[in-house]
Length: 344
Image (cartoon, rainbow, N blue to C red; front, side, top):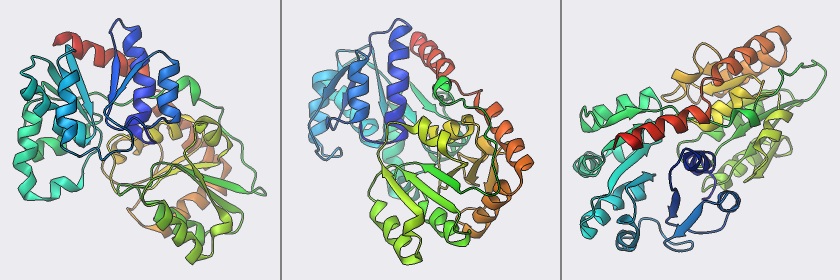
């Protein structure tokens, strides 16, 4: 339950599935106590753990899962290690449990390796439903493993009540605060945003919320570019609505996405949303927010500056973003998940 979109989704989704009449429990491979873990616990969701701080890809997790997998009518997996080990644990247990999984990304590095495709096809064949969080991940998955009736799309959602703020009125004389909320992993491209800050006047500041393996590299880049004093690394935060409310522009610079919760939250916040023109962001942002060419830091800097120096343009984009975000409420997502479970 460390920082990340799938982890955040569990916090918002599981209590709502329970409120719809299901008995809901969570099994995590790494039971390290985090803010997300404690928040779910406080809401009464029972959490089981296979260990603390261990390698989630270790084969022993497959055997540990056999203790749990037969207890439930449906086991729903998220993220690669869980997706891979659950079918094996089911076979070992000779269980009749039905498997469902959610595909959170439009792409991953595994798909670029031809010798892993048969393994992926075998893994996905054991799932009664493969839920893709937007249309592009569904299309890409069909290309990867072949068209299957089990692939369905249910859009990710967020708790709109926490993120709907009035459209901000900007002043040309103030400092402009740019924010990105995301993990520091291979899919994210904070580097381009840091390079963009280098191109902008000193009154533009950047804050990066989140943590991960690439954080040190991004901090080093900020230092090399001489913008360390203008870039704040906030780490893991639980006050994301307040961070967005204090921002002037919200950005998500990525190499690829599924349907990022951060993008919906940013669009809902009453701030203009700027994103990389890549799979998983394009279909959500196009027509409302601003898309910039992948990894083009100068285009990103220009887009930010045009927003902050043109109050009417700023307001128009923010209003369109907020209107689009309202289509992705977590309650609708929970209802669709529940209907899918009942169909099994």
